[in-house]
Length: 412
Ligand code: SF4
Image 1: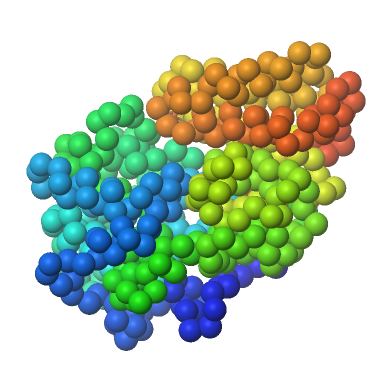
Image 2: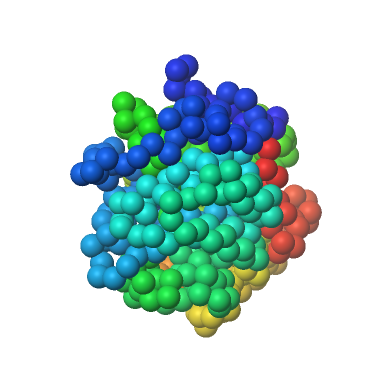
């Protein structure tokens, strides 16, 4: 199945997924209450804090904390709508920008008002998203200066310090922190880099204060899987079990799931009862990340999926941190020996040691993602890993190289 759906109760249909497809134009957005003035004093920031809205780029950081940090930092701030979707298994940001550019631009305007800034950017790599944003800006000239900045797509190009470097004219590569963007971002100014779904939710919380808590708890989830079907983008309420989502996408027989794009690791038995919830997934040893779920087909092999994910991450390393270059390379190369039936007696222990030693040592989260994939493969599929010792696995023989094609999805 391929398509875009909302699983919210009737009457809330259209929080972010509208009843009909196509690009939403300005008249529709205004008719729904969009671009309403922000009252003084502004009640929106407190509403965002009370509702507990968390960023949707991957880290799940509280949105109100980030807004307040930029508002309170000395100097004239900058706000950035980050639409660069690094995870190959996610489509939500590109879909939002292509179909609902006004709700993102409205969120950017509101973020600018809350942080007291007059300068904004929209940061994208997708050409269709860029066109939709430019059209929307022409339909309604913004209250602040907004420039659209294009980057080449890459796994790390949407990391917030990479965004800042690219806007400043450099490469879209992460840099070490501190300073954090709220301390020194674009041109040295305090900078809010906010994911486009986060900004869209800010805008809806402004126009629909009555459902602010629902807006904060709802997720745009990209469903994909090996073996079957196309790509489904679904607007799902907080806490929904992953089995419901898997069934919707045609993946109900899955033996596991890769969480959060490539960021949240693999999960095996018990995956069906996992809830769509940052804290509960973290407590279960996973991570929701950007909300992309890739289901593992029962006739496939989790070792093949992990091997391709690690190889892709190693290929996407920005090669700035020595530990990342050697670490992702070692993880990917050693997983490949497992996949090809060439692992030794101590290979699994070596992988386990690396997966504990490497997290937190790179300038961005790419190395952590690779380590988590290895750690969760060993934790959730020990028998499947063991079954590869001395025996080549047919599913792994078909494993693709390092281009991430297993996980890549098209915008529905
Ligand atoms: S951890 Fe890896 S991907 Fe991230 S900045 Fe360092 S070298 Fe680049």
